[in-house]
Image 1 (tube, helix red, strand yellow):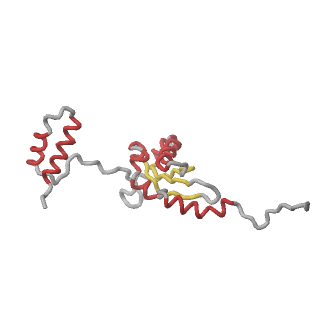
Image 2 (cartoon, helix red, strand yellow):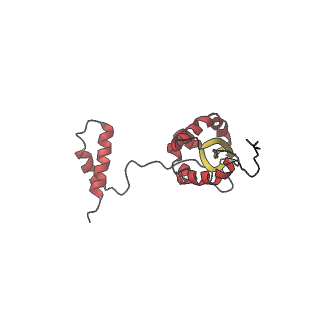
Image 3 (cartoon, helix red, strand yellow):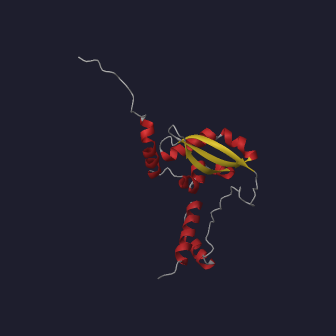
Length: 169
């Protein structure tokens, strides 16, 4: 039996061979920055969304996981720093795996160079659309008056007003 020399010449680490494929696969499976941007209040929760917003998601060179950069104002940064691990768990819970390994918090002034850039307010959802005529609202409210649960009654009245206000084509 001949002695066999073990050598690693010519071999690369598996992580370096698969790094580009892993990035493409994770992007195709919904790990995109736009998802964090569009669904931020639902992912982070209303309390965190009111004081911070996501800026970017960047991958590290040598390892798995990404860094989420979050923007907040100076006074809110210490409070957000204490909730960083909870936020990371929420974001990773949406993706179903440890997509984010680190959260980086950046700070800005309440008003930047252009006015209003650092506002974290989201539009409030209106209870009733402006295009509903008052008579349609009154009819729908009368029809839903017999429902016992107040939340359900209001929802049915809003639905009825929307249905009555639609034009028949």
